[in-house]
Length: 332
Image (cartoon, rainbow, N blue to C red; front, side):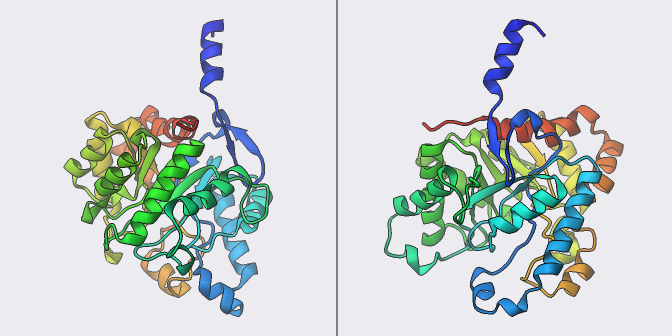
């Protein structure tokens, strides 16, 4: 590599905060772009903590993360925020005990309303709280958030959801960290998210529209990526028996998007939750037995290769694209 190439490389490397230490994006390696160490209902755990088994939750998180690490995963991007029971100290302990690079988020997860605290406060006030997490630290720690998370589901752009989207956009513009969304492709809300973010001045190439792999509507996915955004093919392990696409249909969709030249816009993950209090644990295990942090490495990637995906394309989706997503930093 000549001197000019070295200078160019130094310019593109950025630093991202993990729950343990900051790292260069060049150190991210194989990255799962959307996984949850634990999902809890904020209000319930605050009022009835006896319902929760902290030891079991920690053991399950450590077990799944270690299993992913043994298969070559170096980084997990963890989009648990308010509304999903974010606990940054729990994440930090998992990172410490597993040596996994875990990247934390700030934002607010809701499909409809926002907490009463925000009913009589402005969008900018909400944005200020997100910025505090990014610049000062999360929940009284020095661990800073590295990306922003928001959600829009089947109810669509409700007033509460719009408030969060606009707050995320403004926090992004002031800090430069990227945005990840939860979307509901069957409702086409990814495009509506893009509309609002773009109206707020966001460069859509710094946005990941999550859960886009829940549809095999190639025209819809093409519209998302043609506007510049990354798309998350990130719910492997949730199958047709629980209302989602089968692994086979997800793979066919990725193959077609690669054929059309969009490999540099897709990222892979499972959206796995080591524990989630939305359902009884036995129900989750029975209905989604492969919904974990190793399904992609164990079964999906081999199946994609059998279908014609190359090692280079796998590397692009699991290493290069996550790195580029976090390298684009800087307020504007």
